[in-house]
Image (cartoon, rainbow, N blue to C red):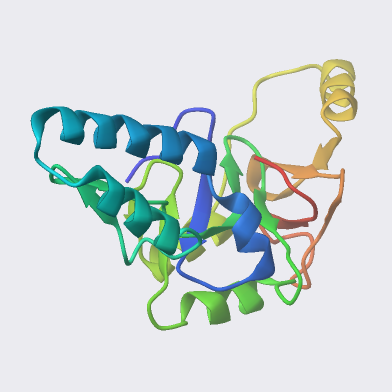
Length: 193
């Protein structure tokens, strides 16, 4: 599985964590507009009881994707909550996200071992734990040829420092993991993508 040319975000899906709630991409207002349009269409052709569908939706607001609402055979529901694992960008150490209670790669590996969770990228491609670990820990890059002065300017402008295996390290809201400077990932705080 290849990464996108500029970078890819990764998520764990199905893990209950307070930070997961604000990671959802579906806007409830957009979902409701979509449902209303389908209800109107259903009424127009007499294929569904629009009031029943609306009541069903209202009852399920806030529930997970395990209970989708169907209108004319189309499932309308919110995607499951997902928690940002981090971002892989070409030439950079992997930006491993930290959250309350998740402050290291070992913490992430415990999350990934939770029954029922899955790992996926921003495009919906599933990854095994081994594939995710490799994306984080087995990184290298052949940097562009720049003069020492050009390289220093680029690093300064991008809040970066030289890292291992030809990679650069994050310096803004990031720290080197316990494994030390040879690790090919940084522990990044805050919301980034």
